[in-house]
Image 1 (cartoon, one colour):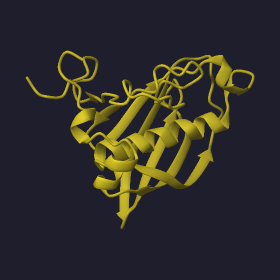
Image 2: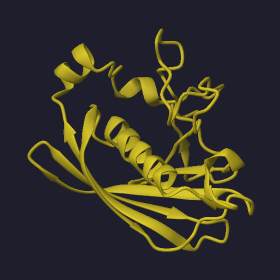
Image 3: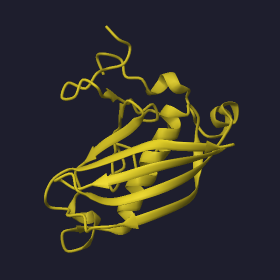
Length: 173
């Protein structure tokens, strides 16, 4: 049996484990499952992509049944952050983002789909393409995220990076 867990709905996807959940003080708005006002994002790896499905709730609307643009940006920023953890095997911080809000995103029609991949590395700056699709898989938002990435020893020492193996789900997870 492989070390990583395959998604039962899509065998090409591997579930990403959140290694921060037991860490004292962890309350990330984007990914903590215990933050009562947070987004509670969970991620999967699919080849070169990192993906997530997310069901919006009404408290995240900016207008009637429409997802707030800042929440859309936060979703894509969080996706890019996890891409740095999983694909680049370190941590980093957002240094720049270019967001295009192309279509309104409904909050009352079903799950959204997020997708991201590394475009390029420019020394220690990761350039990451991200996309947000609505319930019908129509592209609504896209962003290019620039992440300043830390050397792995600094990431571990100062920024809680637990090592790449901590993100791999065991078969029973």
